[in-house]
Length: 249
Image (cartoon, rainbow, N blue to C red; front, side, top):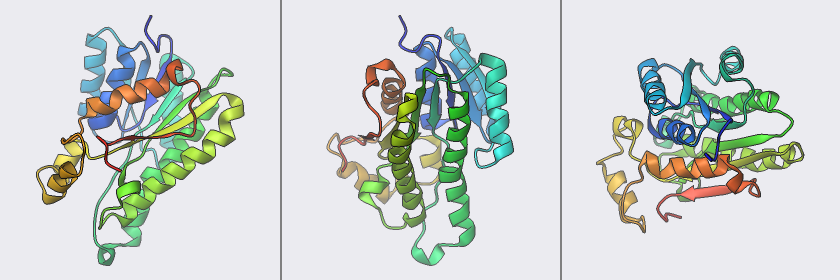
């Protein structure tokens, strides 16, 4: 019996990278998956096609998580396609590193609107869509909250907020049988980290040198943890922040 049979999952920012891998992992365990994307329709369609080709169920739904009207549409289309929601993975996120001299209100708002406000709006939508039996919310945070690298003041602040929100909502929603946990990946090789110039950089080399397991993470290192947190295997876990960093602390 698949761990997530008859479950419905919404994964934000799932057109590539960690989100895509999580969407595929949930589908492989039987969940019907909504693959959310903001702009990368082609990537989202590829994820859906791969899931369907492997016998799963998935649809791609466009939506900017920082916009209430888009969030409302995500859940309306989810309801139309699959019914109520059982699992939410708040994966959508953006980042840009820069020294304190480079901090602007525009960049602050850009990152906080997606990484924090977006998470709250989507969580609000999911809570309305969960049935009486509850559900599982999985927030994708980051080990930057532990290692606090120079130049990451805005991004680290957003992920610190995610960690705190995870703790708050685990207490706020526990009586409704809604579990809220976070995964904090270390550096993971994705399209995004390549585009940002992290992979192959001095930052990357230093990160790997400080990683006890001695390598860069891959999206498929993160997906099984999300499957675990989505399933009844983790039914006694809520408010947890799970470091998925190869041992980096």
